[in-house]
Image (cartoon, rainbow, N blue to C red; front, side, top):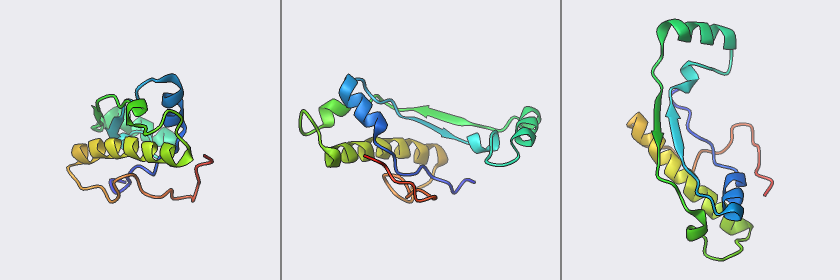
Length: 118
């Protein structure tokens, strides 16, 4: 599971941040898959109570996407660029926690082929 990296982000958080002028705060977590995996949820939780797996958390600096936007009303391409910028900063935090180089700077392609609606 350590080879799993964040997928390319969707644009909803950036669109919300643009509308509200609120910053996006990246929070990276490594090791959560040891507590709640994709399978055997109850078993994973019980084992986690006994073994206490290590989970690392790093909170990045707030990102002012309004200041990063090139126009007052960014279009879909600009919103995508901003979402990639936010994700790049999150992936930097994950890479730092893991002590590894990320396979892609803005997130790997979704495994299930899910697409961002806009």
